[in-house]
Image (tube, rainbow, N blue to C red; front, side, top):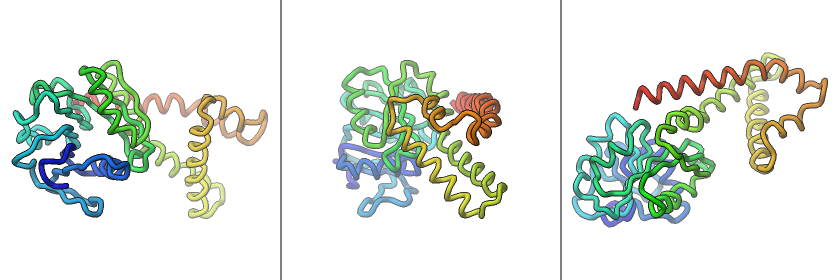
Length: 259
């Protein structure tokens, strides 16, 4: 769908916008008009418009452009969106007050999904001041891409960005580090990477399957007193918690700077 009659307009179709689009199409949501002059890797049969359609009024506008370019990208929409339009921003650092000034009367939602949304395993934090109806409409878009949580305060987005927004990169680097450690212990590089990757996948799947148990309880089940796991954890545990606190704090501080 490339004209203005689509109920959903997606402004920006980079990595995150593209991941959301694919899940929406897989779930039968839409039609979706994609508006991005430099869209890449679009799903088969989807074409992008270089600018918003000259006519038509969407039910939902999803803003997925780079934060530094958002005002210019959405300026053509100013004055065209009515009080029944829902504006959802997945842009880091752009506050609801900024959006409300450009789109007075529209429902405003901020969202912070992460890249596992591409496979329906994302974590999305949401915030709005505009009530239950707006919340319900936003849930309908983000539940197909994974789990959702609603924030009580908009200021929590900096912590969310640092934890779940940036978190997949931390996990990928942990896979790299675990594989490198296996290689240093004598495994071939390809074998070490295969084992490290599947270990993370399997552990995450087990945590999801046994949702009633805490992460600490799952860890304790694997750890026999005096065994090999206990020996490894004796090195890892004193270092990891303070290190991750520093990691998340650094990312949150950068999020505040960008905002």
